[in-house]
Length: 256
Ligand SMILES: [Zn+2]
Ligand SMILES: [Zn+2]
Image (cartoon, rainbow, N blue to C red):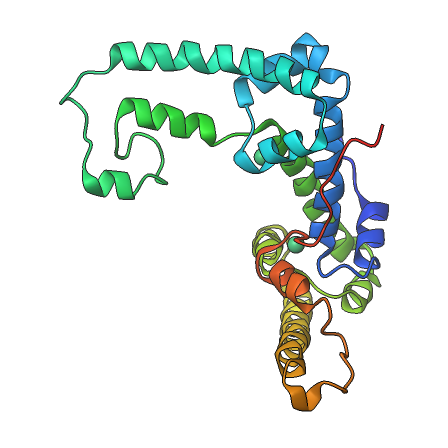
């Protein structure tokens, strides 16, 4: 089956004026996933089976709390707890003191793949923390948006002009885009797309740098009557450019 292309969504995101089209789409996907999970889906056994097994990362747990719906959250937590308790009980029962490879170095390297270091109990917990129902839903579509970008580079001759009109990408998402272009485009296509992307990245980072520099200058009393230019919201835009996301967004809440 042919994968769905997100052509319209990608075009809209590039023209949205956002500092990164992928942040723009990610926000939408994330909010839809939270709405889905705390809508009526939590009473469906196949969804709950997935949320029991996959759980939620800290970021999305916070989003679920902020979104509201105590009863929905309680149902999801009730059976996720059951899943975690069963697994943890088994791990703790099988644990043999002194038999593990625990070392200070192992603890410092806790981000390494499970089994590399640390206790079996610790590794099991970290493994559980390594997946999230919302992240998985968002990532799945995000991958296809990146594929759509490559498809457009290959098939839509004006697509790079559209990219040039956008404000470029945050550094975080740029890593995925650069890797995807290198893996999915042929040499000729790469030699067309990379110079555009790199030149744009330099230009847009220059622009953001100017904005954040001027914000600091504006605090100098000598500049108090000067124009803010584009620096009023430079803090949140610089944060986004560096790490992705929309730090100035209001909390996402259930409006119903
Ligand atoms: Zn981004
Ligand atoms: Zn997550």
